[in-house]
Image (tube, rainbow, N blue to C red; front, side, top):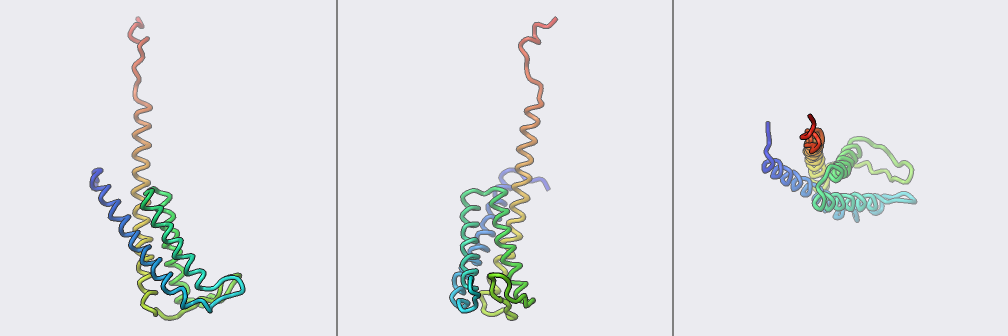
Length: 164
């Protein structure tokens, strides 16, 4: 499928909106649920601290992607959303236990409702940010190949006119 610039631009902004919404849901849910997990802690960290850290990382990813939509901001949004998705799924199905400064966050249920919303938002944001990364990568290669083709084009040499 060949995309013109207008279609690519519209698709880019739709994907940015999808990622922003997914990460915004992630941030809201983590801030909302953080206080419920304040008592699950080690001597260093509580689960509430980790929830707040995830929420702040999601907000930073959203702001970065909106202000500067580039490959590296799409990659950062992917890391935040994929890490959140992986964490919620792993801690839902595997009792990892406490390790290092991290408390045991095993929770074998999909309750409260926010846990579902967060997992869906993170997964959607992860897929959207990968798609954005691919679009930005292709745009970058297209710009680079245009620059290469301009650099290799024959240049007019005024001395050549007088060569016999």
